[in-house]
Image (cartoon, rainbow, N blue to C red; front, side, top):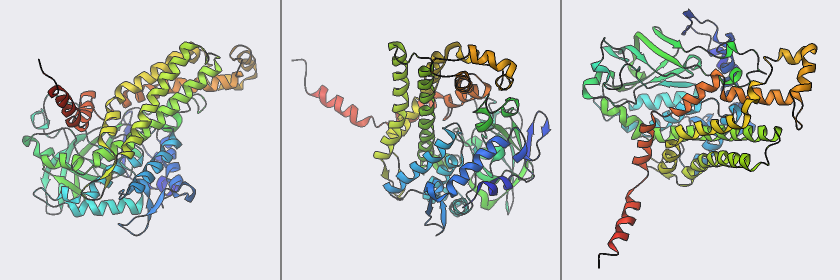
Length: 481
């Protein structure tokens, strides 16, 4: 099993990461990337610890592997997967959205249905199976970039000005392909091992050059990451920004300057139908988004706990209006958690023996994520009120004896001394009002795509046939007479 130290050592390669016009060196020690890298390292150490029960013997390799990369072949496997994903999610309290188990679930879905990758003009099924074995053996951290740059939402890549804005194939060789262009949004990509590059946006037959799916090492020549500004370096301390300084996974635009991809790393090639097939005919999209809901449920539980703690410290947790708000927040959190468990309860094996969570529950919960998260934050904001604006400028005000006396006297609650109150409200601010908190607000709203896309998943997978049949049978039971 891979350890955290193994993972951190792997970051010492020639990857091209750019921030503020400068190339970043030594990611494991860089203030913008070391915090999230250390958090990912902790996840690998957790998985390697026998006490967490996150390992299993992978039938594909006969060796021990991390359960989050496995293909669930029974209901018991599915439950064990959920417990493993929860172990990681609870370590980060749900604040790391692209932990290695997310894309790992997609790749497990791919491997369960290799035939989906042999239905085009070329057979790439062996590549998918070989890469999944590599994932099991090496516990690789894979992120993905599967959204085209936001050049135009009204057209697709073939109609854009300029050649190969979206990543596409510019040359086909005997030993592989050469790709050029960009793709977003590689969350966590700078500190990953590999990137799965593909396109989940529907394309047309005129976009065949862009209908690709492949994996590429983060350190491949000619591949660049242009990162949004990391928030951790501006955070004054872990006390002042406890979330920012641990869980800021940098989002990045991924650019390819004529990068060579060997055929063994290619999953889909100039196959528009194959793009959709890899996600939706394999169960990958469903399985990967169940992992996302497991993580989201843990995050909402954390926010609910934070709100409850704030109400108690403020001494308002018995007020009927506050109880109502906490009850609403509890309902939101419980609804997502119930969706996760309902998906497990209604799981069924598909024709390959892959046990998949229930579609209705997964996509139903997912369809409301863009509304649930902003509402949860609004409730927390309401409960903290001006308290998050009254906190000292930094932990230095707590350390200086000349300022600490005033803070102890004026910034306290009957249920909490100043140190406890300030620490709590610093956390609340980082969750709601900091750059990190604002990024998470936007992130959760568009986690699985635009709301109309996500609700479309819910619409197509609800199973309206039964309810419509009930209505029609009822209507047929009476007439005008």
